Length: 286
Image (tube, rainbow, N blue to C red; front, side, top):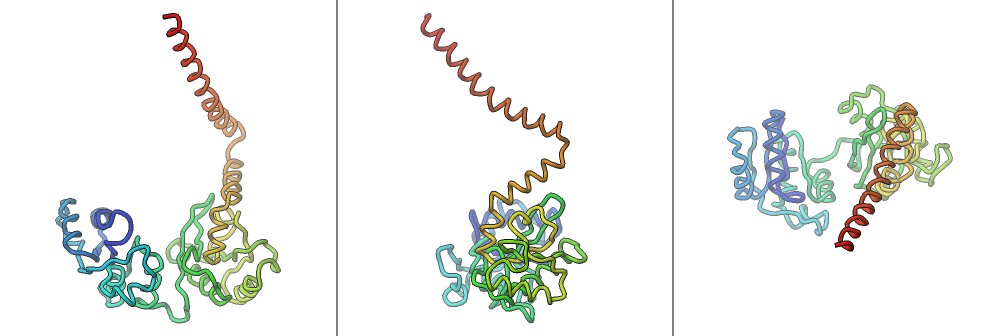
């Protein structure tokens, strides 16, 4: 399998992207195409001392900067590395594309250069989140803000197959992010999305809340970018996850761990204070 890598995207590019491609070749036998400014890429490749044939270079002399509009690789910088990487996938030179660069530009080239699956209107960004008992797929996590009900259904469908193919879950449970678990909770868009998902044929389990992101009985959570920000990063979600994890430990072990933490927290200042006092006493006596 060959992956096209936007070598000029992200912080510390192209060095970290070149090092990552070499590591993928050595550790996993993965073929990559580093897309970007050839001279800079080859200079970094030389530093790694890699001499294999799994890392190739594709010339692209322009870069989409983070402060530029997402449409830049389509209208202005047609030789941008992120666009050329997408063209490698479109033309069959690579099976997939990786970029740590401009997220908006990545979504634009994914849709307009690579294309979307038939029946899908909007691509989505998906994140695989850790949990107490399983991993969960959360989408969309940054690409779409103003979504229609049919978009939520598309997200659920994409998340369903992602969970099946990548996480190995035969029948993923789909949840819809809302302000409450009851069917009637949420905005008009969420309520209509609930109806569509209920009729979709997927294993839809209903509405979920922020606390379910890390510990709920669900495999795929469907939302939009605005609600994702408030739910996945909420203190309540993290606190609930920590409480559930704590409850799984034996009470004695849990008390010992916390006693140790508090003992260290309280003892360090006291030792510093006593040391400072004794030093001052010695100086005054001298």
